[in-house]
Structures are given as structure tokens and as C-alpha cells.
Length: 110
Image 1 (cartoon, rainbow, N blue to C red):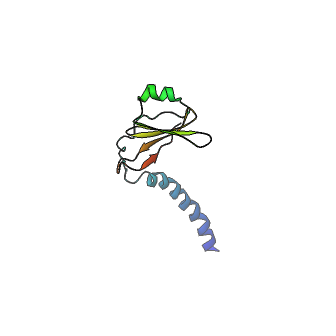
Image 2 (cartoon, rainbow, N blue to C red; image 1 turned 120 degrees about the horizontal axis):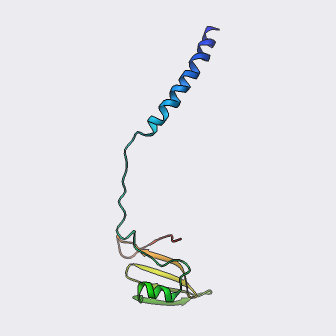
Image 3 (tube, rainbow, N blue to C red; image 1 turned 180 degrees about the horizontal axis):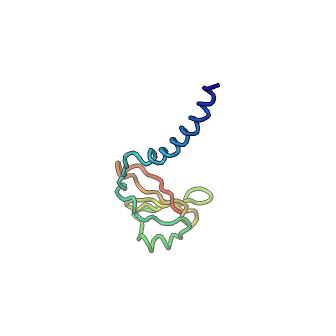
């Protein structure tokens, strides 16, 4: 009986101490700073832009790969990125990987 009364008195106090200490514990720890990758802030064509708009904004591509498939998908290759078009609209810009120069890293654009 005494044990039960003691548990009823101590349990709420222990809970209260945990609730008070939790915010202090949540603030402890190290801060990890991750530097931005080189070229991460590079502007890319926006989805839905026309070929004309891309050329006005970024200049002529280094290489144009003719349309393939149905719907036709065309690629414009620039030095640092490639733009995929469906008909004459951007569907996906892809930044080249900086570590090898051969691969690509997909980027999401709004």
C-alpha cells in the first residue's frame, strides 16, 4: 500500500522533471555546416520555357541533339548542363556532375 502511494506521488514529479529538462536537452549538440557545392547556385532554364527563351537567356547550345521519339524529345547540350525539350518546351534541365565531367546530376526546378 505504501509503495502504491509513493508511486502515485513520485511519478507526476518525475514526469514534470522530464518535461522541464526536455527543451534543454533538445538544444544540446553540434551544428553541422554543409558548404554549398560549386555551381549549386547556377541558374538553369525553368520548366515550361520555350527554346527561344532558353537561347535568349543562356545563348546558343554547344551541341543540339535532334528530336527522338513520340512526343519528340530534343536535347540541347551546354558546357555545364543539358536541357531536355518536349516539342519546344523545357521538360527537364540537368546539371553536369562536377566530379567526373561525364555524369549528370538531376536538379529539380520549380
